[in-house]
Image 1 (cartoon, rainbow, N blue to C red):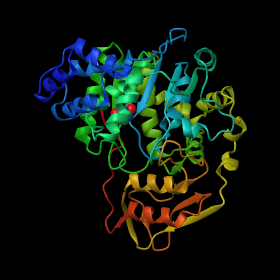
Image 2 (image 1 turned 45 degrees about the horizontal axis):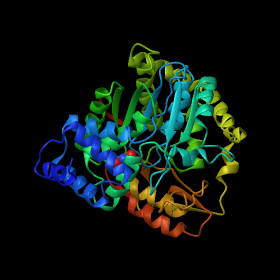
Image 3 (image 1 turned 30 degrees about the horizontal axis):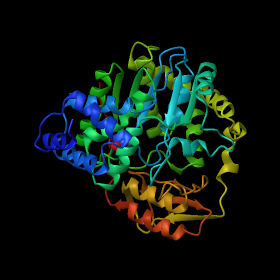
Image 4 (image 1 turned 135 degrees about the vertical axis):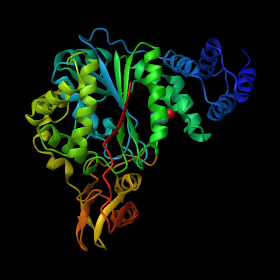
Length: 433
Ligand code: URA
């Protein structure tokens, strides 16, 4: 293989053979293929795309570039979930204990947040003492014991993806469906689950702003999963405004706990039940989605999953007493309300802007090395469709930094008020299987 010939083939719209994709990824991982050639290849893929076969080959080459987690010692069908990310997305914190409560093992690896979207691992670290770095043995034992564990990504999982993603980030080639699909699916496949449910977000706060792009990404990821014998379903869900009412780390955990206690936070509840029901069907616990949804809804209402959540926090060394009362974890030095300066209906909340406001307060990282303040938060009291009068509190912002005014400015950009009530968007746009 001469890398320059492969770049030329892709530049001119040709297909790369399986063996060459494998050799290219191996060479890139061990340093034989330099960054400048891989950058040129990424740009050629960006413009020319890839066939389903090439995308599956690229995915598997990235899986094989590092460790593959062996979950075979975990009893039962392992079902994983992945979200393409958004603002206020605490769905994993609800879905994992809910699915585990019926006995389906959830052995999950999650990421940290960068920028304005949070990561599940950051949220869990709101519990003092919570350990995200279990050994493989402790991870497997915990899942067999209490049916769930969530840890950070291990050091040598898909190193090719790690290197390629960093390169894409600085060469304007992140936004390519073949590259995103293979990046996400390589990590999911290497993490070892038998089946995967993908929560692909669409709307102003999502990576894929338009439904068409979200559908194309979802379709590609489902196709990759199937080509490597992982049962895979994608649910396209709404991220046109933040999910739920809480944005931040400790307060997102608090809101997830409230849903696990039976509180009906509509968008969170519907999306969590939809994802959990697909997981439970793939895990072969229920024969149909409708049966799964009805039963899991009852389990949410009666608090059955909360017990699993508490055991999970305690098993990983976290202070589980906070599950009964999160107030200690939410205290901040400063607090300020964002109030309505005009009357009308909330017609739009640009989720990204709310995410940036939370980041300014300390809830997110602008750079990888930034330290998160788990108590920094935005609580939304008004969502799209709600009526507001002049002076009504729209949101409450909390921080330990003196950045509240800067964050309020972002909230002002985020909220649009109009005279007419907007039409509600669906929470679940489509299911791709
Ligand atoms: N998330 C990933 O893991 N990879 C991408 O390429 C984009 C988003």
